Each structure stands twice: as C-alpha cells, then as structure tokens.
Amino acid sequence: MNCATFPKYSLLDWFFTLIGVCTFLFDVGSDLWVAKELYTHGEFMWCGVFVGFMLMSSVVIQLFSWFWLQYDRDLKDFESQASAGNVVLFSGAKRVKLMLFLHVCQLGFFIRHISAIWQGFRVWWRKGCGSEYAVYLTHDLSMLRLIETFCESAPQLTLMMYIMLRSNHARLVQYVSVGASTTSIAWMVVDYHRSLRSFLPDKDKQGWLSSVVYFFWNLFLIGPRVASVALFASVLPYFIAAHFLLLWPIFVIWAWRQGTDFMDSPAGEWLYRAAIGLIWYFSWFNVAEGDTRDRSLIYHMFIITDTSILLTTWWLYRDAEMTQSYAFSLILSIPLCYVLGLLIKVLYYCCFHPKLWWPADLGKATCDVTDGVEPPVDVQANSASVHTINKRMGRHAANFYTTNTSSAVKTNECETTNASVL
Image (cartoon, rainbow, N blue to C red; front, side, top):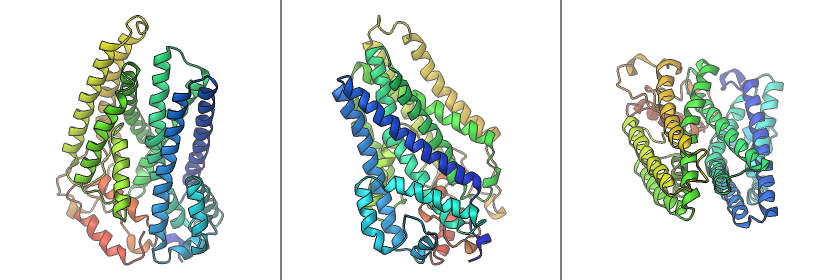
C-alpha cells in the first residue's frame, strides 16, 4: 500500500485522541466520586438518578459500538487492515465473542480509545503508514463522544445544578462534577466539529481562532438551555420528566421525518434517531441533507419559546427569599447568553468560518449557510486514492455541511462503494 494516498493522521490528531482518553477517564472518576458522596450523605434518590445517567449513557454507547462492529466486519478487506495494525479492536473473527463480552461489560468504548491511541502511535512511529485506519477510529470515537456527552454529561450537569439550587449551597464535589461535565461538553464540541471537517478538502484551513469562536458559540447556546432546565426542575421536580418525555418523542419523530440514514440497519437507525432526540433537547445540529435554514430557525424559535416558559415558571414558583440574591441576575443573564450565542454563531459564519473552495460547476448553486451547512462539498474528494474512509461519518458530514444541492456527494458515494470505501 502506498501510505501517501491515505488520509493524513498527524501528531496533533494523536494528541487530541490522548486528551480525549484523559477526559473520559477523568469524567468517569469524577462521576464515581460524586455518586459516592451523594450516597454517603444519605441522598439515595439523587445517587440513583446520577448512576442511572451513567448506566444509560454507557449502554447506549456500547450499543452503537457493537452495531458498528457488526457493520464493519462485513466490509471488504477491513479485517486484514485491522489485523495488520495489531490493534485490539476489529482484529479478527476469533475476537468477536471477546468483543461481545467486553461490550456487555461496558468496556467497548474504552477499548476503542486504547485501539485509537495504539494505532496513532504506530502511524507516528512508521511515519504515516496505517493513517487510514487511525483516521477511521478517530471518526468513530468522535461520534461516540458526542452521544456520550449528551446522554450523560449534559443530564448530570443539569442534575448537579438542580441539587445546588434546591439545597442553596454546594460542596466541593459538586463544583468538580459541574466543571468536569462542562469540560466534557466543551471538548466534544471542538473535537466533533474537527472530526467532521476532516472530510472536507480544506480542513487545514480550520484555525485555532475559528475553533475558539465555534466553541463559545455552542457553549453560550447549550449553557442557558441546561440552566433553564435545572431552574425549572428546582421548583417543579416531578414535572421535568414529563417535560422531557413530551419533547423527546417529538424530536425523534422529526428526525425520522427528515429521513436520517446514518446507520446500516433499521434497528440501528432508530437507536440513532432516539439519540438525536436527546441531543436536540439540549442543542441543535444538522442530521439530514436539504434546506436546513428553515429547520434551524424552527428549532431555535422552539427552544427560545420553551426556555422562556421554563424560566417564567421558575420565576413564578421560586422561593423569593431564598433566591433573592441571584434570581434577578439569572432571569436576565440566561436569555442574554442565548442571544449572545446566536450572535457569535452569526459572527462565526461571517468572519471566522474557513471558506470552502468547491468545483465551479457547483458554485452557482444557491446555498444556506446555517449551523455548519455549507455550499456543496465533495466530502469524498480524491476518493479513488483513499481505500478506507469512514462511510457513515462521511455521509453524516455530507448531511452536516451540504444542502439539497448536494446530489454530487451522493453520486460520488455510490461510485466509491465498490472501491472498499467505509
């Protein structure tokens, strides 16, 4: 194999993967610490809810990982490429039962991290050989971290803020949990965006300043949403579950109506849509091709309305004496932060977004530049020379960065299917 033809895996990519593992381990450690503290202080219900978020997230992640393992085993030459790298994951049919056991033990996600680190180290040591498999592993980890963040970190952050509001005081462990969850969400935003952009021909133009602006845009949109949910729960704790169960099916049905096609089986696709519904409860991102400007506008208007209802309910039912010191500042700062996030989002696309260079025959198309939705881009550019591309993530990148004028992407994807493209 000619290593030069494969997607380049840099030392910075390996560093990002290593930081991701450290963040994952720190997050797990802090979660166990928080659960222990809640239990020892007699807060058994909150301990149960907290551990429930951990278990739910872990089970969902293992399901996604196992689905992808089954999909990948059917790919031409994939077993030989994985085995050639001497990595732990996807290294032969004899390991299937072992991998099933590890996934049942909730270790599949961790094994993927170890595999990515080891493969990345081999790429660096062998000066580029094996880059395609290292890039593949990184793309899958990015999506798994996204799902893990919104299945676990965001709900846990909401729970910790709720407990602090209800008790009107906080212990050190609660501050650590809030910080760990916030860090996990923030890192996911940058890492996921960076991974998707690797499917674009101009990924090297994504600078640090652009990434920082992108980070703050998402932080200022997600933060107020989490805070408003926590405030609502602090006055009507038994209604927050009803609120979620009312919105989540709506989001799942909306994802279904958009015709998502991320997974390779019907069961896997419904699992993906269920995860999307949970993500949309906290944040927006595009999952299907088409004119996304209207969808993004509808979503933000809906979230603004819902957040206003949550904040109004909290203001009417709050304990005026207990919340006197911070109520007025919160009721003003939360909406302002969300508006600031929207303004930063506009600023990002106007001033800091890495402009894409695309073929002249596509340049005449009218495009929406909304929430990562860009002019049509051939995400499988130069695919003839690339033998291993993460097809599901490439398809998701096409949906995330293109509009309904992206038929060229689908055409190219069909052409590369017979070339052992993942």
